[in-house]
Length: 592
Ligand code: F6R
Image 1: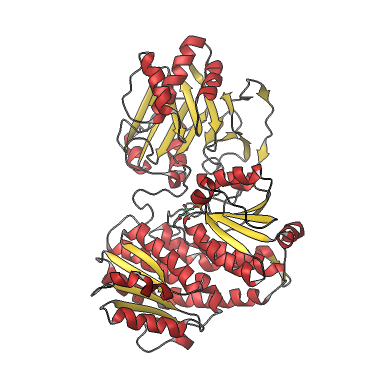
Image 2: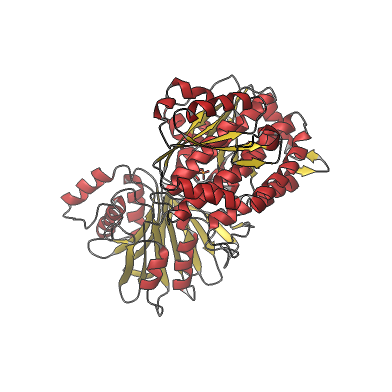
């Protein structure tokens, strides 16, 4: 993963680079660093998030050129040696890297043969030395980059400074995203446009296998054969990427509370005068296909389980795949499959890998993403945006609800079924009611379960899909081991794990499955479990923990997911954990 930034000729490089890194720390926050030129290359770096780096980097830096990096560790533990920027042995080349070099061991052996040695364990340090090696032998930095591009296998977005060219920055890209921002007398680079939008709306997007040279006023880009390519200047109207906490203590809380706004925005965007406004050609492709495949990861995969069920309801056959699994054994059910990819970030490497395969097979595809201009948004045949606003907290909340909402609308639009619009509108009251009245109760439950080691969520049908997401959210930010089990599966194995005092959280919101869920509750209670129930009022019993207003049962992931999100949030808070940046994770998973 990792985020990279760089600038040339900008009046306050420290401000751009450090704030830019903060904007990009959704890509990783194990360690961070910067490098700049002032009578030689200077580097500041350390383990920890960008806030810590801000304390280390002097206020009064005088430089025209600066690069920076925020890291999610792949090769090598998060220590100072492995923190970017990396400098080559003879101090000619200094770079920041996002990606993974697959043949780094071969390259390392090659460089050892050339008397290179290494201070850390990263593949990125090897790239710095390889560039230096070719630069010293070719005597031309651009030729050196071209040669490296030929040798290196894997993914990379690189921003490079060279001791001999204090007024120039070099870039190279394959697989990982890299965008150049054009200013008046200054230029930027970054992993995505978000750090730059404050200063420019004109961008150049690099394609794979391109490299180039950037000065204050010029950008020259070359393809893998060394031929200069004409790049289009893209004017981006990116949704305002606000990192303002708006008075909330954490982004996760803010984002949970933005859920109603997110649903409303989707209704405004994709419904006009009571009718869906999806592109007819997209709807026709979906109608013509005999099978709809969903591919996604993590939370987005969970939303595909719900969304897939909606399409099935309208007569479509579907299958749902975890991207990293499908990519290694791609199957194509049906004669005319249509593929829906789902990704909040639009940058998830596993999914980008899948898209490559999908394109090789010439299959129709759609991305549902929150990130306009992202790799998947740009490269898929159709794209539908979630319009949720930036999601900063690593744990996805509002984007999950947005994904489910949009999938429901898309499925319903195939049959022009507009009842969904009323059901979605009604679910808003349920969510507001949860926000207004249930937080103290959820905090009490959080306090009771915070010291538990294991926990189960139970549900059936749509409540099971919600349980999967509830369970993922809890484990990723509270570090409590949690599993979601379909009620009917308990007796086929998992019930062996039920013991005295283990918390079991049960969703009962579907009239069809409620009686069986009540049976499941008795089964786990009689084995000592401490049961917490979340039920809709018409299905509730006096002993239930939380009773919410009734809603169309198939919308449980929309209407009551907030309860699960609050619970995970308050448990993490009660444990004193870093809610927005849980350990070992990053917001955008840009490595496979
Ligand atoms: C969990 C979470 C992750 C992401 C997953 C896919 O809260 O956020 O599981 O859902 O990494 O990310 P996207 O949706 O950006 O492809």
